[in-house]
Length: 206
Length: 206
Image 1 (tube, one colour):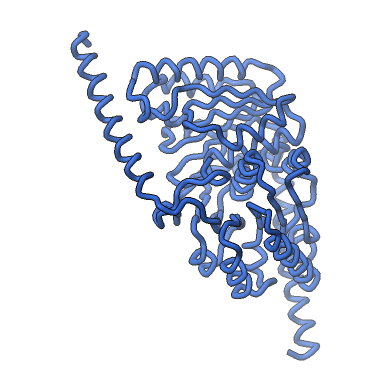
Image 2: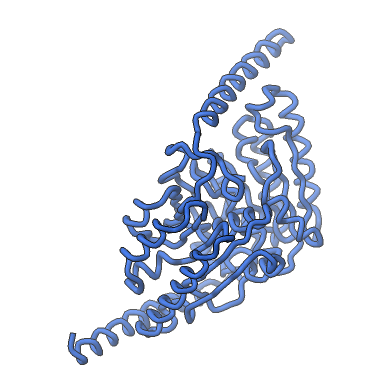
């Protein structure tokens, strides 16, 4: 390319980017609601639903906001995130309920009681006026198995105070919950290493 | 329901869960590769790509693994996650490169130089024998704009040592990168509060 062609190309790029910035600035300016607690749902058959919820949690903790977590389904092993969040015990309340994945216990009544206890803790945390963000990890699983009354759960979430963010995770989110949510992301599996015979690893799966 | 019908239902549930557990145990037993550094890609137009990467990072840090982050595109404001991760400075190396989003600078040459400098830092971190996980945040954006040679980037990632996990984020992941990856998740937008006039908020968007 000649010097002049280079220059033309650089100017064209600058023009394109300036247009894009103007469009973005206009979009930001059009948003008039400054603060609103969001009901966020992470669903889908892919990885990253709980992981992204914990990323949001970390972000909120970084801003110094008091936060809470209720895990409705507990895996067998101690997880890396659980240990990492111990460094935030000044800001974070964490409840892990349940007895392991439901296909580990094979006892519907026990699972149901555990789900109800977890939902109680969630409601208690929602009543705390200082809390800024609450993660209800794997609540979708519990709703899917019918361990909690869907209509009540959705009504309580919808009636929460207006500046509290709630993040709900788990596959097969109920349509009623999606309807009530502000922000819904579906995590889809494109490619998974289990298919290539690789076991779950510390730091990736747990 | 009569007591007997309850009992039948409970037994049916237990049988179903036992079958599911057996299937899951068999699947886990079939995995023979115990440890392998994964190339993980988070892409798609939805939220949660970087957030889930930072969730993975947190998980790895919770296990006490030394980790690194290179951010190829820098937002204008200080983020909650950046501040939160300061509590892990004993384990984590963090480089933020670039001069803000490319549509903020409108200078292709400067953006390209920043991308090249970031890629240098990424290669240096890949050479560290103790590192367990490396996040290359928004590398996909930089590849999409052609600021780095795609073939070289993919080749270097493919040739990294076999026990290093690398997580690449950003929309529009290149097919060559997806081909080289072990685990690919697409985050899709189902519902977004921007559409309802809500501004980006601390703890959610940054």
